[in-house]
Image 1 (cartoon, helix red, strand yellow):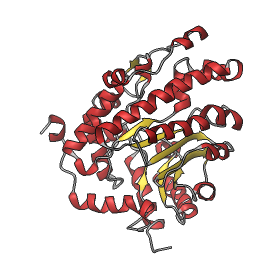
Image 2 (cartoon, rainbow, N blue to C red; image 1 turned 45 degrees about the horizontal axis):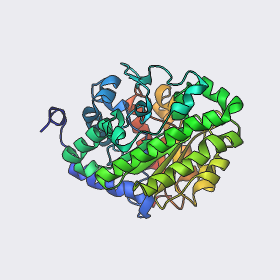
Image 3 (cartoon, rainbow, N blue to C red; image 1 turned 60 degrees about the vertical axis):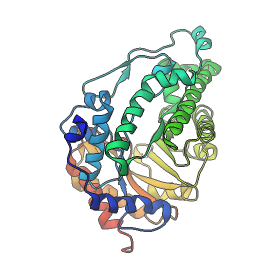
Amino acid sequence: MSDVAGEFKPIDEAWLKGARKRFASPFMGTNYDHIPVDPMMLSHAAISNGHTIREFYENPELGAHCVAAAMESYDLLPITHWYYSLPWLTEIGMEAQYMDWMPPVPKAPLIFDPSQVEELRVPSKEELLKGATLDQLFRSNDYVKKYLPQMFSPIAIATDITGSGAQLVGVDNFIMWTLLEPELAHALVRVYMETAAAGAGLIADRYGDAAITTGSVLGNNDIFSDDTVREFSGKYLNEFVLKCFENGAGPQVFYHLCGNHETDYKVLKEEMAWSPMTIVHVGYQGREVFPSDLLIKEFGGYATCMGTVDTKLMLHGTPEQVYEQAKMQLIKGRDCSSGYILGTACEVPPFTPPENIHALNKAAKDFGTYGTW
């Protein structure tokens, strides 16, 4: 047994069996137990298990087992996902800088002059296989497959296609380019999208399948108009997912629409590609959490809907406040014909008080237990 695995107690088999049935309910229509809760567990798992955020990202085996342990301790999902912080950007040429108390960040933009854009290219498969993203993801997945096989679920990650392309030149410059040099901005997003789709295929090749995790984060109404979100996010989401399907990834797709999607959810809905195992999650409508009744009205015929509790509330609110907002969202969304999940607006903040996560589960049991409403 590895040193990492020896640090943790075994996952309880009885819990895992029940959690697997509960997790399958929204997709299978089996209505087992209560509505699942997914607070998008990343580095909080390390904090809750006595480790730092830096350790979570520098050691994917440790990070993955921390997630598994947190999933059981909070009674969440029966799967273990570890996310590399800057997927595919280092392969294109950026350098990552690891931080003690936050995820890794780019040391500097890769592009400083428009003339450099034409030098960008999609890395070869051989280059991707030698890169940091697949090294870290393979280490995490191989570890889970060996030591936590019943929680193994490989994923292909491109959490923000538009925002990741923007990192190549810096977000401020990218926003300016969408107005003044749109063809250059498109070139940045395209090289990232094609790189991520090729990487998804390599993950699927190694494990036989890979759930696709993607979304629109920078592409939101706080920054862009609906038409700009369509051009620089929606259309690339569509092409990315279809390329992933062609490369063997899927069929499960998780669309994480983070930030304010007050009106652009309509154009994203028109552009996104769908599969029988799709989850849609929208963070905010203006400054308020995206209402679950609107979420299921717009997306319920296409996908399982994941309702939102404010991450600011998770970090700074009381358990009572978290419980009340979760209750409100559950009541609005629990009748979704294609299944409903209770989540948080983005990654649960690393220093979220544990009692606030427990409050999500209490609300799900009180107002999301099947057969009681």
